[in-house]
Image (cartoon, rainbow over the protein chains, first blue to last red):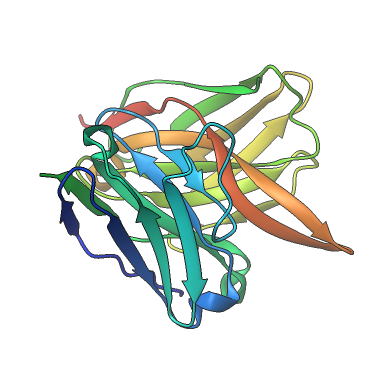
Length: 109
Length: 125
């Protein structure tokens, strides 16, 4: 089965740029989606298809995907961005099963 | 706007069957794929399976022997049954909509764009 690897935690000061990575074998050939989850809440889609943003998501959230690594970039980080972030793909090698990364806790210092 | 709402018992006994329903409001269940996803306390997200409004399904191989997802288009609902539960099945269960596009006759699966608020299910005697 396909495995997505995320760092458990990332810390950044307010106003700086946070980068959260998602590693997978040839992940650049897949579409990667990113979700933000705050404590006690359901996940919210923040980036889909590698780099597109749903309506209502600030432009500060962006994504890229190449080779074996996809990256969620959050510019001008705010205290309200502190949350868990998950990447997700569909694994075509296992009958199109959904796969999530382990999640990254973003801490705003 | 489309909204999802999970419902079902919050407590299930070991070895019994967990049953949840997701009600879709503000839009039709037709022409979309719908998924169940769970999250054990303090842990990450796990995809359980999906169903198309026509009834076709696909399940996580690790749960496949115990999972059944069904759809009732007349009620705009889809449901999850997980049999022979243990404490390891204790989790928040979410229902979600799957964005899809078509590449000819091939379905291209996209993001989970709409989520329910989630419902906590505890497996305990």
